[in-house]
Length: 593
Image 1: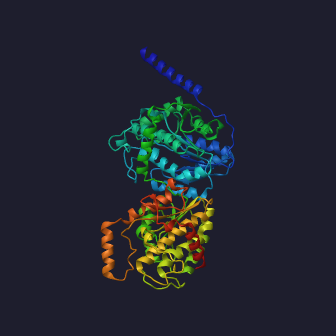
Image 2: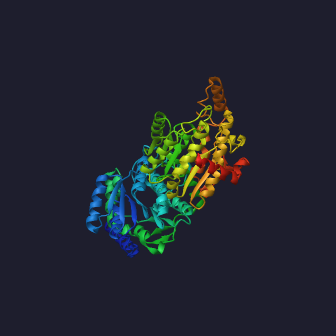
Image 3: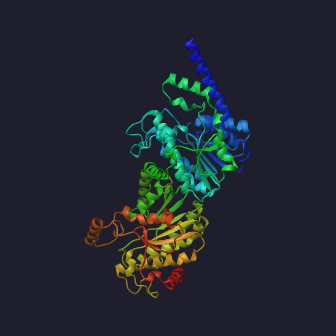
């Protein structure tokens, strides 16, 4: 009797849950179309992601299904095309358990897609076990959180340029059972399958909050969503077959179908009601309150910073093209390596093909960015500079960053093939010519930046417009000092000429550093002594590269132009460097040369 009563209670509970679920399940009734829009859905090959992809394809969007299994993605793509009649559905491989795979995916997207209107971070998994990825992170945390975080950050420039656009992070109500511990973000101290999943979803809520703050004013919104407990293939990774079967059967009967669970993400994707809503948490097509900790702005900021460290992400340059002259060694090498690590296409421009090739290989190996190349250019030859720029125009559609880093000291007193004092040509005339030739491409790629590497030694420069090619006197230190003074003056005048073009130009003193700049000093004793002292006392090449990198990537200087920097802050150069009339005269004289 009691057993039958117990069974009846269980059945009543099950059917009651089923009725409750049907009554409360939100349905997206918006009929908005998506023709002309581009959508990326991670995990769009099955379950909720498949239903979202199918709905958006039916609305006319170009849908990119991003997932690990090429076979399942291909099958899903074919099925969606067949049932919607939209042939603009494609699949791209990405493995969220690999940062390299995520970076490769984003690089391809930035190359092949002109816009991105909607990013849905839907992919997730439970019951993955306790092991580390190739990047050294807990597998569940990387697939559910670190991978989507990196992918979102890398695609932000494309989302911003396509605004108004939307980001949707698929979370879960299980975030309410998470344990926030900054000492255990990567689940290294303690773990359980449920805690890994719950924590990853709490982290998604928190970065949704922080990203919303960071995107304020960009017309890119970001929201998190609990889709509901659904009968998907989410539990396929649970190793215990009995537990897996029981969960699938119970959830399959009581809770939502994948189509029902897809309704809230679809609502956030298409509804005009949430056009300006950002940083919120939704369930059943309406805003809900997440856990208290999910609303803590300070914790969200801290989590963002800590996550950036784990995924090795800082201001990124995916889709950007950078030219670094003298990028084969010293400061230039460190600049090129850093920009490559940020995802830029880096073109190393230097005279030695052998050293450039070696540097390129080393940068590719250390950063994993294969989009690093070298082009030969000899600054002692104007024809070589012109040929280099001609190649750039044939191979590159844009230039976002030009860093005139190449320079030399101790070259002696002789003339180049163009009849100019060799140091002045290498350090000033050729960078001037190269910059002028590339300005049209920089303008068409705006906002873009030019960085001229100067030196504090410019303060000892003596400008004589009747002798600025140093034909009357030629002390070694004066040749170098004058060339850097000229660079500062060129920066000042070019900034004036570029006003309103969204192309900025700044000069910087990197600091005295242990580089190869003195390698051409002929006196072995002097060269060795200078290099030994500088190597011990002054900056490493990595340290000396920091100001150039700051000027290259920092949003703090996006509208700053015509200034002089040192140690990542603006400084006052010599009085001569600030003389606008002198800068104009020097520009006109240099154009003639």
